Length: 174
Image 1 (spheres, rainbow, N blue to C red):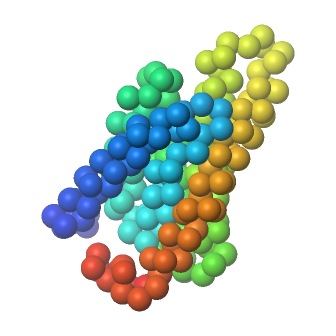
Image 2 (spheres, helix red, strand yellow):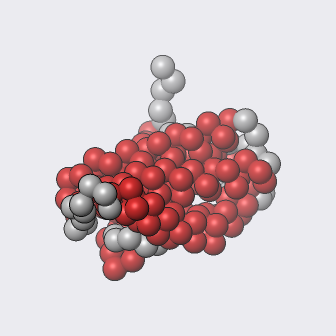
């Protein structure tokens, strides 16, 4: 097992705090059908530094604990973030081209669209015949909000991080 340095552990703790604060401070647009969680833009970081997955996961757990959707959101929403960050980390190991950057940004869109869309449909307690339609509608709304954040903020953040030696301080080559 690879050792995690104190610097990286500290960075992950700060990342968890930043995710939580950003989500709670913008709660009016962070929870609901169309979620534009500004903090989700940080989900590009595992592409460069896989260990940040854990900081983002913890931050999402904390934010969802403070949110209005209850324990189901703590469990499912946090697992969706963990899955999307894990996928972004895997994509980053294969190269750093633009196509991989776009694919990494798409991971939170897909995972949250499916998982959170399904969760929102479930907690709305629809008639059984309405459930598939609501999953599609809520999933599309969540995916739309995620796509706005990931491609308006996340992708430019990725491109900015790749310039110069911005990643070198964490022992990562650009």
